Length: 111
Length: 117
Image 1 (cartoon, one colour):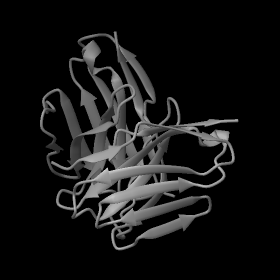
Image 2: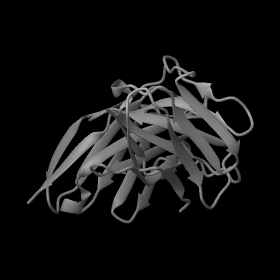
Image 3: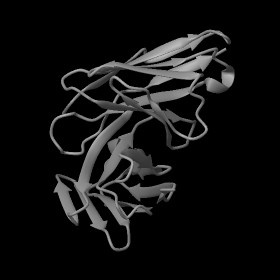
Image 4: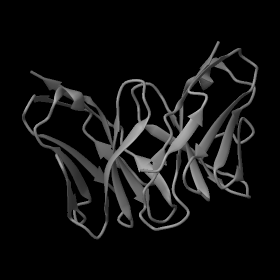
């Protein structure tokens, strides 16, 4: 079946850039998403990209999509302590119209 | 952005009782809603796809008689955990996509934390 993989943990210094990576297997994926989850809270949609795009920028967030390698990344510029959270990559499976999630990457921002 | 509301946000119940969780799209219509379950420190697992006016489609391994899903209108889907057991304790999250438009955006509720004693 479809699979989405992410590294589980990332630690960065405040002010640096963070890059969270994600790989997926479904080549027919249409939309790819990044969600943020803070402790005890639901999911917050950060940004998403359509499969015919290779980059999308939204303020401090930059999403890069390499469709050939099935690789998605989220770059957070000028990372702040408030960015500490779990970031989930999710892929809309084109054949079944369902969202498949990665395990989430826990981002820790330290001074 | 569009708003999806879940209620209750937290619920504690006794083993053997049933609990209903509501998912509402507040400012858009959603033909399809999705129910997810999140285990501690793990990702979200899709439980079922809820379709307005028809039966839900359950993922493999999800007991449809235990997790009853009803999508009675274009703005409301409910998940009922029947005869709850402690192992059903989890964080349940719903999501919905606007029926109109093709943005592909999926909006999530804030989640409902179920604790079964």
